[in-house]
Image 1 (tube, rainbow over the protein chains, first blue to last red):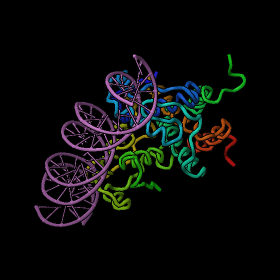
Image 2 (cartoon, protein in one colour):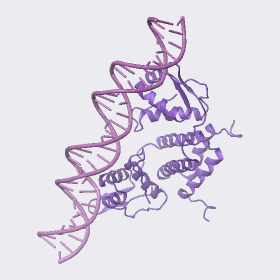
Image 3 (tube, rainbow over the protein chains, first blue to last red):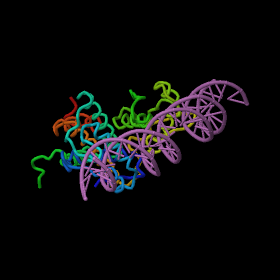
Image 4 (tube, rainbow over the protein chains, first blue to last red):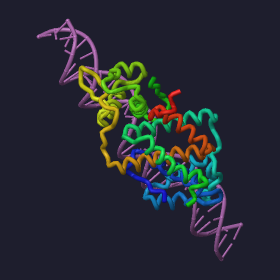
Length: 133
Length: 133
DNA sequence: GTGTTTGTATCAATGTATGATACAAAGTAT
DNA sequence: ATACTTTGTATCATACATTGATACAAACAC
């Protein structure tokens, strides 16, 4: 879990933050769960502990985790504390979606392809009735 | 059209490339259409012409436009020329989708909210019957 | 051919990401 | 209480990425 790619164009901090955010969003990590220590995770990933610490601090700024020296980092909430108007959130998400959809369209995917792909990923985040096989 | 934000964390090159990709994906730009010259667009956006040129070169590498000195840049195709196995494309898109969905989930959006948001954006890229009101 | 228009190459300056290392606070054992 | 360990934090250096200023080269227009 939480694999990163050193050769990715995405910065390591972003990859780590993103991976943990997803784990929280999917309920793999719930409030109360302890995250690995910065040294532990850094060693596992083969990177510097500062990089992990920076990711943790960003997660803390978002209200998702809580960090204290000597104790470690713990999942605090399953939702982010809003730091921008809801309208702005929708705007930002809309832009992200547009980018992904354009990407898919230019790669030649059909609307059906995309719908299926999104449905698959959605089921893990918003477990629906009818999906619990 | 094609607004960029100098204060965005996203590099200018990415913003430009992304904006033009979307315009092509949405059919606002079709094969044969001329893009503004690098100087023109750079002046409009208030940035350096090199930054625009870099974006154009990336679009050319993707097979979307064709560039020649003295003549300018022209839209070449409405699809990208695949430079990775189809499987890899799906993998990449899946990762992007996961990120956006996690973002939405953590912001507190419901599955219905998200479905609606995606449907709105999709209709511009894959015009469906029943959406032409 | 001459001049203009267009993209390209080169290089400098600045910012960003990552890492090495030292520090400080909280916990743990005795 | 004190020593020691565990944990996150701060500082600084380095490498890389991003943007821009400027000079160059190819294609076009006349």
